[in-house]
Length: 195
Image (tube, rainbow, N blue to C red; front, side):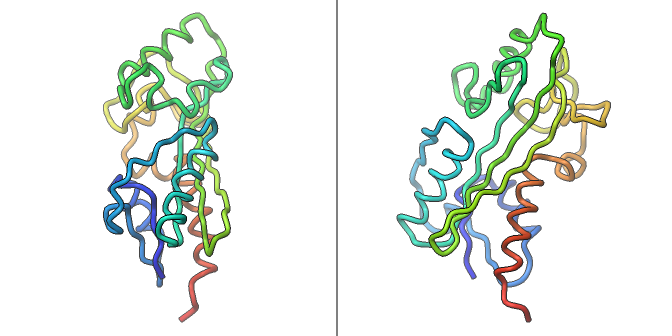
């Protein structure tokens, strides 16, 4: 059974493939010869994830899923949200994005935030959503050199260190993406024929 993940991010592909067992084969966009730039024009995580999965389903008619993730900060009314990767302008300028967040929160005492991932799965033409979140707070300054994005300023609840100070294994055990992927995998396991 073939399943396409609408991404070329090798780390994301590996993370999901490791959790899938049995008869489901996972493919990325490169594997199916899709070189399209799928533009995320939605204003919610659900919409952006859905744009990716529908693009693949409509063009290839393969079971597939897409995801979208971001950081939501309570004091900023949920910003940066779907604009997390391009919050300070250019796409993926992590340092500038963190600077903007820290500047906006400078005199703010409420530093509650969460990372959210939404997965849109299209299975036999039917769309389902799976969501994962991890609650935490925004630090006053960066700490740690691991991870990516906002990891150096995000401290998950129950921990005294940031995502950027954790090992990849520690972060993946509690991350928003891991939680969403676990729900996806639980659904897919029911779809696999029993040996």
